[in-house]
Image 1 (cartoon, helix red, strand yellow):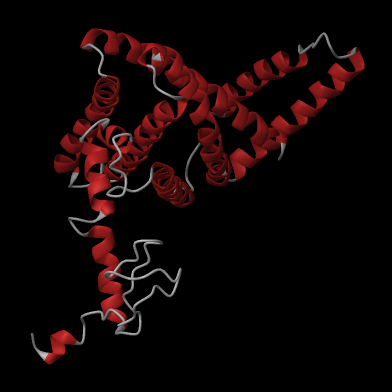
Image 2: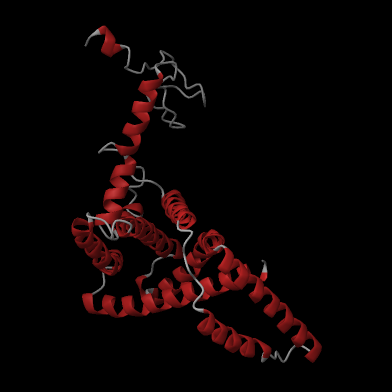
Length: 304
């Protein structure tokens, strides 16, 4: 090795005890706290290169986790409860990273698409507003007095009018505000859906945490492939559509297949019973997500 190459090799301090926890050292990593003893008093490019290797290297936790997450349904969850955890990104951290990237990119795309039109033609929209107005005016909660019902109706109508003006003036901003609330809703819906998952697989004898980890991994997969699908759709009107369209179709087909196989791999039940449970679980999930999205929309309108 030449002197020039040698200067980029990070040096391990010649110390006998870990500076972090004072445990005796027997190598580059402390057996007690896990701290890497490589010093940072070296060339900046060397540190940057090491960082990228840790993230994108073929033997890195990130690359391994991403590969298994996308192409091996249920594998990460099985590995996690088999005790092989250090080689993969922890489930909660993986969820936070993938959801953050997904909604961040979605928010940026919405901000640039300022020509989004959420309001229909004047006649049709006016007719719809009248129908909505009539429904709202007909609200009558038994646990409220007549005066309280009228006040509630008036407040809702005022907020709907504000929402209409906001949508017409700046639909992109309205959608962005809506998207800002969706991650929190999905995060709180996750444990609720896990309860449903636990009920459907009650006979499996698995703990709630085990069902939750599978749900977390499947959501991480959805964030990644939906982001990929969304990015592919952005090339739909370009000359690359010939290449992009088949890939997008494969991604769309892979999503339901993946979720089904993840249930099959993790719970080890038959193909038919897994298919039946998969259909019911998908229905429950969309119902929960629909309720959550509706609550977000109501909250957004009422807090304008």
